[in-house]
Amino acid sequence: MTRRNSRPLKVGLQLNPYEGITEHGIPRWNDLKAMTQYAEAAGFDSIWVPDHLVIDGPDARYGQWECWSVLSALAAVTTRIQIGSLVVCTGFRNPALLARMADTLDEISGGRLILGLGAGWHEPEFRAFGYPFDHRVDRFEEALRIIHTLLRTGRIDFKGKYYEARECELRSCGPRREGPPIMIGAGADRPRALRLTADYADYWNGFGVNRVDRLPPILQAVDTACAKSGRDPSTLHRTATLLIDLPGSEKSGSAFWLNFRSARMPATGTSEELAELLRAFARTGIGHVQIWLAPHSLAGIERFAPVLELLDKG
Image (tube, rainbow, N blue to C red; front, side, top):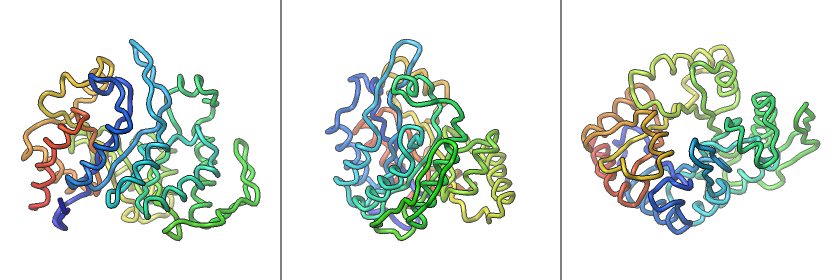
């Protein structure tokens, strides 16, 4: 399927390599590869992978395949679809090395990477894998400075409270002179995160905003943060992650993941209704959505494909 220029916004698929995300347990690599290649053929614009090490639910602990390994492999088995992290936790990796990793993955993908970055939020995985959880936003700000500077200029000499990168250089650069675009998620109630988004990001992301009427005050907060940073708000691209349930998805996954989704009131409806929902998001200024689709399967992608066809018709 070839995407037509009339599509009002880009539509991405969130790939979830979580244990328990389906009734069969954790998706294997061949499952993830098949879903991604099918999504590319069906006309999705992007594929997104979250970054967790473990998730502690009320009933059990759930694992996930490591984000960057999956992203790198997907970049090598696709040709057109954009590859994004939603989002990489800077607390899990040295920021200078992460900049080098991002530049390398952008090379592998031929310039298709969108680098989503975040501070992390789930304390049990920090504790389990031995990473510090204190001063997360302070650490995130230093990491952003290192990553952004290295990707945009190729060099930095920095010594902070939590990180340092002394006389550090990216000696060879990927296909884009200023590196891959950076995406940061921030809600209207997170003024510091919004400031960092305005200062460092190319894309803003809102997670789980499944209703259009909730967007205006959030987008206004994004505009205000840009104004305070002296940035033209129109230079910051707007994205949103939507949870969408297709018929039959109420049986897809463990009790934990079913409860996680239901608490966030996923959107649902016919293909025509879902296409109109995405058009409404586009009218508010959202240029790219990431769909967390249930059921999380080839069948789910196939059943969602008519929505893309409707969007392409205008």
